[in-house]
Amino acid sequence: MNEFIALHEPTLRLGAFLGVALAMALWEAGLPRRISGCPRRRRWPVNLGLVALNTAAVRLIFPAAVVVTVANWAEQQGIGLLNALSLPAGLRIVAAVAALDLIIYGQHVAFHYVPALWRLHRVHHADVDFDFTTGLRFHPIEIILSLLIKIAAVLALGAPGVAVVIFEIALNASSMFNHGNVRIAAAIDGVLRALVVTPDMHRVHHSVIRAETDSNFGFCLSVWDRLFGTYRAQPSAGHDGMTIGLPAWRTEGDQRLGALLLNPFAGPFAGPFAGPSAGGDDRNDTKKP
Picture: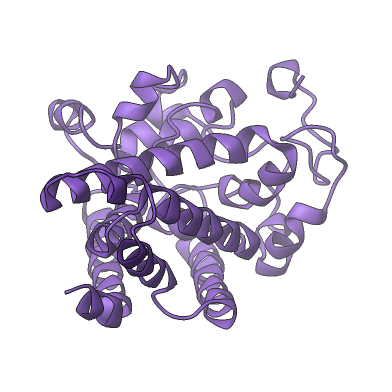
């Protein structure tokens, strides 16, 4: 079973990715939550171009299905917390998926509060609009660091290979879903966000207001934000009135692919919202102490 999963993991992930991306694109076209402020013909080639670059970078550095391969090796060697516990197979899978989601939550918080990591992560937040392609927009160095963190987490946990595949598919799908510019009835959203991160919940995290940006860090399960006190129910300006993005990275030039690749190396280290377009944010409530 583990060998089968490792062999077919790239196909499983690609199939899930294409299916969810198509579903989200159709949903956004048919029932959008907000009027787009920036044409998709300008944003999508850049965001999807980053996906292509990230995929190529990972494939150049790591073999295919590297995380699943590491998980299978750890299981064979009895390495990791879950391999030291006598748990039923199903419970080990559930525990591993939940633990990996918690680790990604912690990683996300770190990428906001460690200045060097924020410089990478701000490429994601600098998008001036919000749709499912925003959930795919990350700097290649952040993608590589995230992969290394996942490998370390899988080793420490002793996560089963099948749990890793389930988590990778869920993480990718939930990232596209919770960044979707899709309308969900408030009553349904309330039920959903009791368990998972919804688009209305995560959109708050992409507000231009710093206090809102530093909230709702979860990607899949919503419980972590509630548990650690980072949950914010709604943006102060409302979903239709809120501004998406970062104060200092809003020009058309800032959004070009080349500029995004160079973004982490641009501007002074004057706080997480600093940037060349505005010389840093000049509002007190957006500057890091």
